Amino acid sequence: MNKGPTGPANGRDGWKDYYIYGYVPYPDCREATAKTLEYCYDDWCAMQFAKMTGQPFYEELFKKQIYNYKNVFDPSVGFMRGRQKDGS
Image (cartoon, rainbow, N blue to C red; front, side, top):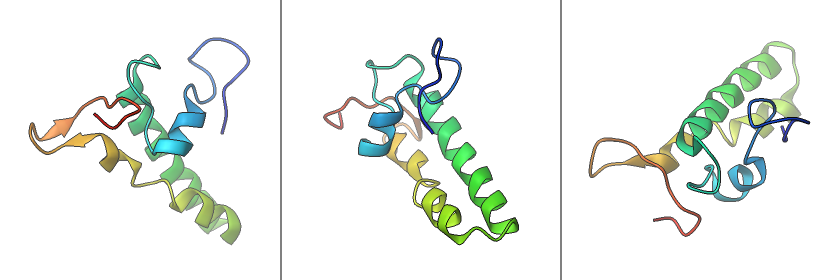
């Protein structure tokens, strides 16, 4: 659930902002929008696994984040777009 030891490809690059804002902000982190979407899917998978293994604490923990993809959806273009820390 946090940054790995080397490079942006392991762990959750931008994890602090993801938990604070509900998305990985651009341009602070490379591939911010893609990472936000990936983390949402990962959280959904982790929630399902927690549910199957009878871990209600972790199920609720991950459940809180599975809809973060909505934070990068721009209805004016009908697609996902990067957001800055200030929400723009």
